Amino acid sequence: MDWLKLAKEREDELLNELRELLQIESVLNEEQATPDAPFGPGPLQALQFMLNKGQQEGMTVKNIDNMAGHIEMGEGEELLGILCHVDVVPAGNPSMWTYPPFEGRIVDGKLYARGAIDDKGPTMAAWLAMKMVKDAGITLTKRVRMIIGTDEESGFRCVHRYFETEEMPTIGFAPDADFPLINAEKGIAHLVLTQKLAPDVEEVLLSFEAGKRTNMVPDTATAVLKQASEQISAKFQKFLSQNSTEGTLNLEGDRYIITIKGKSAHAMEPEQGRNAAVLLAKFLKSELRIGAGAEFVRFITEVFDGDHTGSVLGFQYRDEMSGETTLNPGIVTFGEQGGIIEVSMRYSVTYPFDEKMTDIQARMIETPFTLDIAGNSKPHYVSEDDDLVQTLLSVYQKHTNDFSKVLSTGGGTYARVLKKGVAFGMLYPGEPDVAHQADEYVVVDNLVKAAAIYAEAIVKLASK
Image (tube, rainbow, N blue to C red; front, side):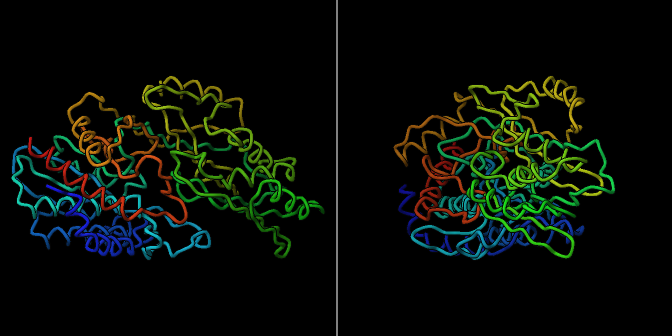
């Protein structure tokens, strides 16, 4: 079966359905969440869109509490799971985008939109693959189930709820990462650093805000000061020039409003972005001398400026299997209660987590902050020699003639909730990873090729 030829013939179908999905602003909205829309109206609408597509194709569909659902085809005792998500991170500052983030515009062979590569593009490639296998009339010995989540970007509550009642796949893959294949996923811990010293009435720093999600590098940070040095404007312009960035400093009444722009990136690769919170703290360090505000910005610069590994506090660790441990201060705030820094920590597969956390918490006694662990998702690993890994590799190699080695990632995919699952595409080797960034895009030809790869993978895995 020439899956690539079939996928090319259905390219318009793929792109039209993908653009429909991309135009749904499926961002978590806690303020608009209800019992019927637990993550807000956007994620629910995206889930319903996919389940409606499954019904139209005559497949079995099921909705689990408007949090997750599945589309299933085929027969058999065993189950192949394809785990996808239709929620997306916020678009961020609209001025940073060349094209509207929820339109799905195609320019020079690339489709631009929030979710194009993470994860709506790969989801629709896998969906076309299921339809192609079904339409080809191939007899499968396993059921094939696309499991669709709506809270992947904010804590996996969707799939945790799903697997409270639904069957665990025998094997599975998540089209939500890189080709050729990811068999090792780092642990992901949500750390909260809380300032010990409360602000007093004489504080110069009134507020500091940066970031909405721990899994994104903040692209904007804003601080409000109640007084400033006479040279602050000149110092700020010099700082912007020296750091090749943009920002504004305005006097509103008796308050100085300072904003700095950074560059967003995924928390698994914080070095690919520029953390606006760290930049702003770095500037304010010379402006603030005493008080909790000065302590707050000093701590940020000492711990995070120029270092993504947390070496100052002892977080650093690496292994050959999954690489370096990284920290991303994704939500950074200061106000009447003091400073709070929420960090996404991506740690190596062999990281001695409990031992490390105990040592670091003891070390924190000497700092202005305390450390709490708000959440922790342990690392995930499937041996390279496993039949699942080898089968998917062979399919990928057949379609690309690329024999790159398997990978590890600091990102967390749904593969980690499976008993045996890996992340399988669809970012190809050498492509820039633009997930969570402005002007996120997917290459149309690569999307079509991925559909062909997923179709053959389904046949290989579900016919054994």
